[in-house]
Length: 611
Image (cartoon, rainbow, N blue to C red; front, top):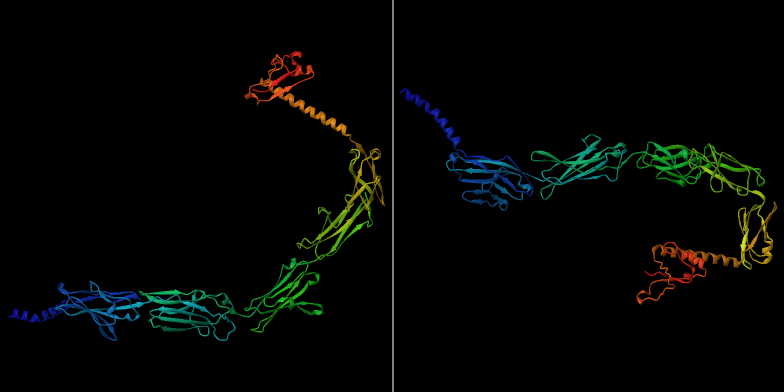
């Protein structure tokens, strides 16, 4: 009895344990992913995995979604699938694994979905999944303030605006300057943001950046970044970089000259550049200091917007003090800058000749060249052909002749300023009586022939030419040279006396005779005949020697050979050689062994040149 009581006493405790174990074992277990993310327009697949004790089978499976804390049934699955009449009806499908698929997902599908599984004899099991839908935002569009901003603005100016379209869920926008994120700062940086939900359910967000700027921001770049979440990670899309026009007053001026101030020379075109560090550039004015500290306004020569003063073909008088003056129209602040312009020059170039009177042939002359300049000068002498003949400001010419009489040039230059040079010419005239340099003598002529007689001379002053005979004369003059051509007909008197060329000027007279020699025509004919005869004999001898060496010279003793042959042989060449001088023939017609043949057998022979 005691044991039974103990057993009976233990029974309630064991009963509770059995009840709990049975309760735990009687429930259907359902597992689902806590979160599913799908891009808008895609297909969401919601899995429902379950287990039934003792490998039992399910009785039904039901899918719901939560709408305002109430469940809305989507479908009921037993042996078949029954779709409820909801907005999802056309987009729902159930797979063999009882997973629920929703096609063409929209932003309204972002909600909680519930899967319930029932099995006979077991408690109902269920679980749920959060469906998140997303749309990656488009690359943000950024627009800078096209009007520009001023560093002197009392209000915080707008820098740029950024817009991102068609995203879900709603993203946020941040701002960056030179790659560094900007944070709101009182009286310095602030942002304004707006968001718009389109009819598609997607978001359009925009943000505007306001900030005070400094002169250094003229080189700054700005961009915006759109941030969003995807699959538990933060993502970002950046805009392009933009810059804004920054307006600031002029603080410094710089005045320079082109070409370099040290190299400006007379005749140059010079530009003075006034450079200001303000934006926009100020209005520029130029002045030049005159007498008694007065200032000449050079506005007509100035590009007032660009700050350029143009001085064309400058000279010594262009040197002086120049002033650039600016006026900032925003701040009404005036600045000025001065610069001394020096125009390098050479003036007073002159050449002197000693003695200054004309020089006689054989004499000497000294040339002196001088000029004035604030720079060190060099002198160079050259002749009429440009050849250098001396250096220094003096040139000594000795033993002058008509041939050396010419134009000489003195060139002066300043080595420290390339291109600064001047030159001047001087003519050295050498006086003297004429000198005949060329005459056509002796001249071979024929009687009654028309010939040209030539006489050339050099002299200064210019001479005149006279001939001792009459004819047609033509004169040619170049510098100190004179040439006279006389056309005459040859006669006995001219052959006997010749022709006299007489050249004279105020310094004297020179004359020479042209001798004419007759060339008879008969002598010419004899000479030509002799030359032709020599050539014929030479050619004939060469032919005979060639035939003899070849063994084709049949010099038989039977007398004259018949040249009459059959018709087929008439095209061969036959040379008939005759001679009046037997001794000469005997010398030419030797036998093959070198023996001479009798003269009686050589009165008339033929040489057959046929094969």
